[in-house]
Image (tube, rainbow, N blue to C red):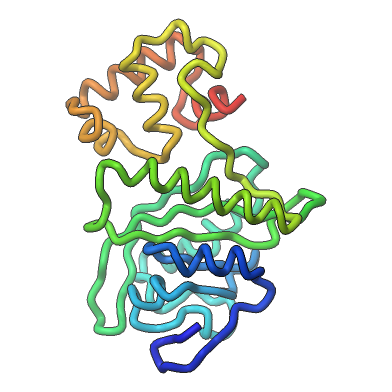
Length: 233
């Protein structure tokens, strides 16, 4: 793989199908181990930063994160690595600093990669997308990409925290929700937040919050995280 210097670097311990998939993704891909050491990045990630983050020594927080986010770097990796199988993907609205010193807002989605024996994760996979590139249809593309990645990882003997979003009738209590409330649930499962759900469904954020309150009441849950766990069963 060609880095910014033009030198070819291969990704150790990354099987060809998975490596090829990462290189075909237009969004940044970064792999860290459970200590925070960066072990792999795809060309899109290198292009975003203007450097190869996987060449940095050690597991200290990277310089290409703004200071406020560096303080949380290991906290987020540790929390993701220790999450239970099936937990929701961690979604961060962070920023990165490129080689010119400019800060770019990004959406980062993290999920753990576990060995076949389960337990804490052996690695954390980051999928990073510049915020200006986010489109209303992107969450569905993300979900499809994650399912493809999860399939490749499972074929290599790894487990992941990724599970396919159920259809609108595949969870207990779905029949008690209105069509629009089920739409909100699907958006939430795809990693969207209130503002982006509102844009996608052509609603106001206030209306989305009202739908969420109604969903909580009907399904007898008390938070978005609890709702996700309920729907994923």
